[in-house]
Length: 190
Image (cartoon, rainbow, N blue to C red; front, side):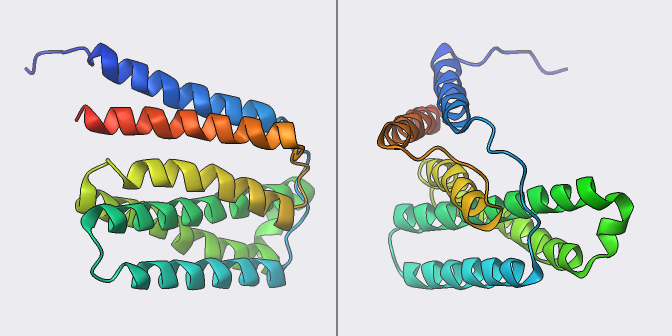
């Protein structure tokens, strides 16, 4: 039987920073309201746009240093995971309106068809980023890109009400800086 060891105090502090930053970020967002239904055209446009940007970003890494490659893969992973989350929110809104009938609607079928590869790509690309630089660069990039992209896509595609005053944007930036700082600190302890 393996001996139980407590995580180092520094690791716990780093995790607390990440949690505090994310909690602050989502507190500033508050309740964005109910998501609108997402039409097939918007689903397809969002999926194609994310796929094209992801492919371009990954292709641009070429023979870049491992840390740069890890950052790019982490950013792309965060964007893919955020798209999947927004599509899941849209599917949930359709389910709320129509229950089981929603699963037969072409808009929902297309959303699922885009959601699944997007979620898988997010997980796979994050793992690839870890192969290039451990969690040192890719993980902070993922933890930054994911909530930002989800908020932007939620506002643009689902018409969610996101606070966007200068003060709100400044608070978002502070919260994300806390997340990134905590993640970098955690990555240096491994």
